[in-house]
Amino acid sequence: MKRLAVEMLSLQTARGRLLTFLLLSSAIFASQYHWLDHLSLWGNLGFTHAPSVGLTRAYWLLLHGHPEAAWHRNRLIYLILLVGVPLLVRDFLSIVRVARQNHHKPESVL
Image (cartoon, rainbow, N blue to C red):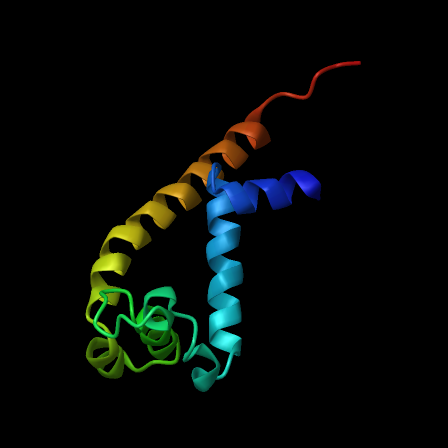
């Protein structure tokens, strides 16, 4: 369990990255929209027009089926997904490939 937590925090393995993404996405989906108002580091420092202000809320809107509202909240969310989703797909396929290789390995005789 400790090893899995380290993988998730370090993002060094495909499994860690996928689990972290799923956990954070689930937390964002389950949260209330107004809970996300004060998460922006730049916004809290007084930068109201920093590129990252509103990204979490834009992602929340996407997860809840409001792509147009997400576009109006922060257009950068689509660029992030354009880069991030292929990386997550690559990680998923890597995990599947390793699982298939391990499944097809002959059992060692004791």
